[in-house]
Image (cartoon, rainbow, N blue to C red; front, side):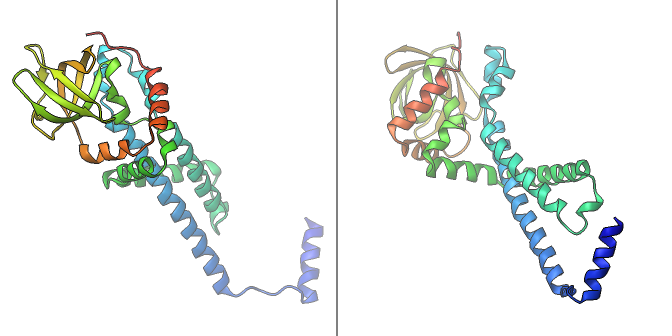
Length: 262
């Protein structure tokens, strides 16, 4: 320490050390906090996507199977969690290097960063940033569906008892449905079929159906639910993927899910 002080005094006396203008310090501080804000915004969007993906699933349908924890591990958006953690680490590093960063312990900085990111993430979720970002990723990056499961995947499992799509026509005892892959289904209704409130049995209405396949292209409905969101947009986005990518993701997803016994 003594040598360091002596060396510093020597440098000052030699005239080789000059004070930097104040505006440079101010500019550096502004740029640092601006960078922290940008990274914080992206971390908030990532958290909003996580909240959107987790809250869109119909978890209560798994009461028939009895293991929500198992499906939580399957459906949890690990891809986005990794991205969010990287952004949070980036914010931590930026804040730690600010003018006042040395005053706080790393634990305090982490808690502050996590709290602010979570608050911003909830606000971004309420502002639909999560849904918009998720839909944009699905539309522009075909590989995205290999890493992230969505409600469309959950309800595109007719072999497992889950089917969703748009009603194209109906008669007294059945409705005709087009699913996300463009396949036509005849949905058989009987006295045991339960139509949930808000579910519209009419043309162009989106529905989710719990039931079972009884023959090729025929599905016996046990429960019909309304589809949340824009069904036409979802169909357009899903049908824009190549068949190879769609089948690869579908096979990987199906292998993880047990059948529902009705």
